[in-house]
Length: 439
Image (tube, rainbow, N blue to C red; front, side, top):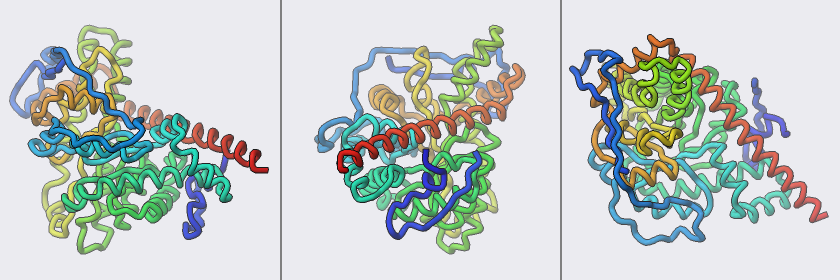
């Protein structure tokens, strides 16, 4: 295994800075059963999630075809989602050929997110990277440096495809996200330097540098934003951490000293389905009728309250002062939108989270389901009082939301580290084989 300093700052080009980082290590209709006044908390006994299914057809959304030059797509629910409700649908996947994104863009996709696990699957399961990797190794690159070149080429190529959307929306949409090394998740300064390096080498206006919302990296977010670099803050699982992320964005904008803030943007990636996966297990251990009735409701409820917090924080005198300099709101991005429990409707983490100035990033299965039978309607703040009731009911059952967020954050970081290490190990083995052949 290579050192963290090499992982986080590979010798990408002769001009890349020499930096050493420290590391410590069926169409569903979904509704809450009780509608009440906008601010009144609903008792847990009156909360229910009603699910109806009807037949559905199949739509395949893959990036495994031999070419990406598909026919012009017809208008889809994704177009309606953006044009009618102001939510941007993004695609949570990236692999070669990157031109496979073209029919998705034509179908209404307006951005792309990636992470170490996505690249681990893409590179390890495809021969599309072999030629470039072989050339890089033969030119003297080590496996880690080659990895970053593979990733950055995909990001640059994807950015080019989404640049028209970026231009048309004046930097409001059309972004492609690339994440700093997950080995830096607990390293404040190392993350700042990695973000600056990635931003420099990708060199595209519509790239988002992904930074995890760990306690150590919240200050990194502020510093990176203050340097005028746009950021996708990832792995947010709790309201308290989300508020800290918003404050870091606002602090960064204010510290930038820029007179024009219109090109410094951000999204806050609030994870959804993983919340239910963990809390559902807790509820099943409690096993009371009330606890079991709350399964599958925690994630959407917390997300609704996150949107209310978003509305509160991006208003008032402080925010208005930044708007005068061209600042854009840090949009909420719903991540982890695929359904883990097959008993739940397959659009559970998309349909109820629709609202203006938000993003929903969807992997293949969620994207396919929503295009096929998703419902386009503003839902995120339809029943905030119900969400409050669910949130409170879970607390009364002993669910500590901050502890849930901490556990999910640790699991998320660990998962990305394992994917990162696994891929690098595989590439190092492949590199040694190539070197042996050429001896």
